[in-house]
Amino acid sequence: MIFSMSRRICVDLYGAELGVSEDERAFYNALSTNESAVQAMGDDKLKLIAAELITKVRKGATIDWTLRESARAKIKVIVKRILNYYGYPPDLQEEAVKTVLRQAELLCADWPVATP
Image (cartoon, rainbow, N blue to C red; front, side, top):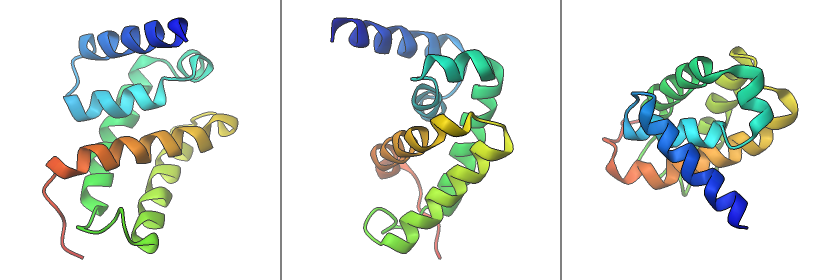
């Protein structure tokens, strides 16, 4: 428990040092929670993925995307495609997708909403 909390704090601090926006840092942190993903991908690639996730998820988010299953599925597909495109380890993708979606739900209240 203490180890995981200290790991989370380190990831948050390190994300801040990467020079990314707060939203990008949230997605970067979601992607980097698994150490083997960080080792396989590297920080630069994870930053690139986080930036693209922010752009594409914001663009695809509608007012009710967290409530409508079809809209949520669309966002999930966007996230999976980006992770596949950049070669995120397949065995770690499902958990990364869940974490990214949870982060997006938290962040979306501050995002301008795209119209369908």
